[in-house]
Length: 282
Image 1 (cartoon, rainbow, N blue to C red):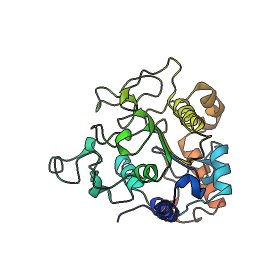
Image 2 (image 1 turned 180 degrees about the horizontal axis):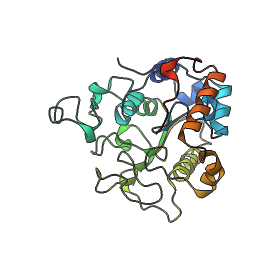
Image 3 (image 1 turned 90 degrees about the vertical axis):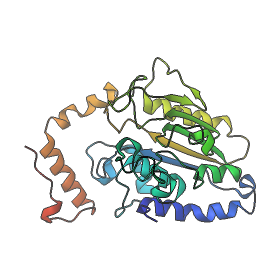
């Protein structure tokens, strides 16, 4: 299977758990809670533990107290990667041989290129739900808009987010000419966004609400939190952007050089390899 290194590691870590769930109820076995966070389109060196100039303190704490991947591969596009991550099988099997928005004429309508989860593999949420887990999803879906492909049909008890490949982070508005409109949802119903909506905060708050609502019943949870704001359009609250205005006034080349030097210092990249040195901007 054409799984990425990250997916392989995740699935290897979860395999003993999934197998054990077939033998005894999840709540009785004391199985762990699982929170899977996906930051769409995030670059390898964006987070501070990997050399980034923005201090991502929570990600840094998770990285330093956990496992950091330094040699791994991912699929070229968003939806194929998400599909493999949630099912553990090759994207061509589950309907994402390509993103539907980019499918060529000879791909459209062909098996494996449906552009939605085609039912040929169960999702991780379905497996865990059937084993007694609470299952929650918040954020960007991009795995189909058909009734059988949306989160409630793919094993999630509670879900909220946007069905398309992205959206404006402040309001119900498309970010791309490829989408005439976007569809925010909660469960199987359309969602009216609150006046103070900002995607990252809204999704994180909803995930916390879902977890808290059932925290006392003894059952573990699987949460899939898929942020959309790292994807275009790049929109962030002013209190975040203001912290780094002076940093980015240095220009692209200076930032690129800084990241390269930091990655060398952290042991993530060798020094003096010409084809790994930063490409200079115009």
